[in-house]
Image (cartoon, rainbow, N blue to C red; front, top):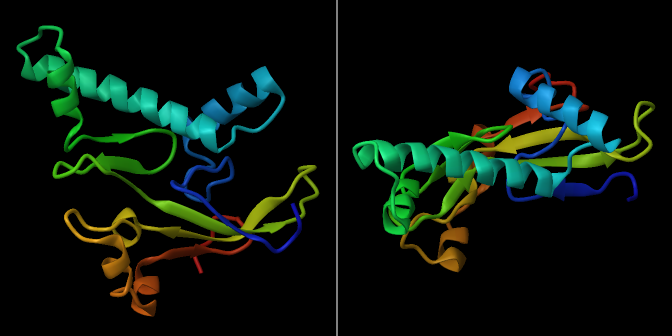
Length: 166
């Protein structure tokens, strides 16, 4: 990938995430993943962990709401609505109204690194989930017309991926 490309995806999944690079849960997972595979975890790996965490928390909630009994499919599905859980990075909330997963978004610009033989991100920004997700019941094209530069006041910026807020 060339230098200077703006990269973002659904979620804030990144092995050098400025808020989680030193978080024990995240850093332990990254270390074990690198040891086992010889490469850094990428976006789908984070989403798989996130899915597993959601299922564990949903089952725990459903079992609790079912007086300790194993839930049926409907009870499990209901337990997902309104659930808040954490994968390896920021919390995710499953919106009760429509089941939409709300997760923060990470964007950054590709740059070279002496430590890695691939591009990493610099000038990272983390956008809160509610700023990048169409509200329940609204039309996405219409909602997008309401956005303006003021939303940047609620975004965290990190220079050079070093964890320092700018």
